[in-house]
Image (tube, rainbow over all chains, first blue to last red; front, side):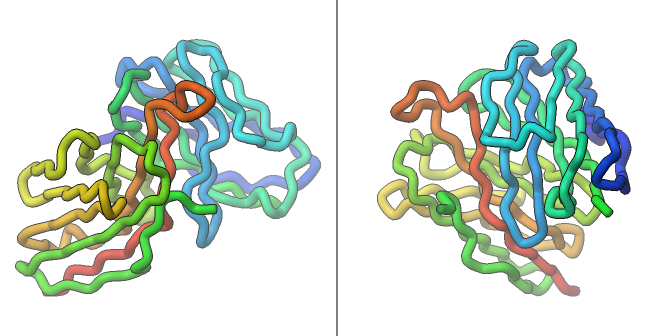
Length: 113
Length: 118
């Protein structure tokens, strides 16, 4: 059972394409996160949104553009990506209070040709 | 530099025995620690957590121990079951750092692949 849904589950795109990843949470949380997991590396935080306001951008290249239209939805817009951007992209949500766990979606496996 | 380390990439345990997964951290500001389990083709699933004011937290077959002086935590699974076979991630967060709130940012280890055999 997952309260965080990510679409699509798999995405193959060329370096000149524009695509978007979507995340939706049904847990009533007020914070949402994007993470990147590359092979052989730990999960890396990309963006944090609290109450629909971006509160952290972890030195992510501008070819990744997040959008949070409301507390239940989060998007990651992709354009002119590089082959090294191929990875698993995970969305998470939580209640933005101290000591609350984040709950993850199943991720989007992104491959850049 | 990695602030949360899981030095064992894999662990193999017989069904019914205890599994002990270890995690070390370097940041003394961390005050909340979590364990996640991940099956292939799924996202990480929250398992159990512990606040720095405690040294032990138990939930069924899962117990997390925290040794703040050693900056070490461990996850004990007793008894281990084949369905526990997965990658286990340790994570930590600090409520505040020297710039103010860290906004719940989690730092993850690289994970340990647990295999429980019959």
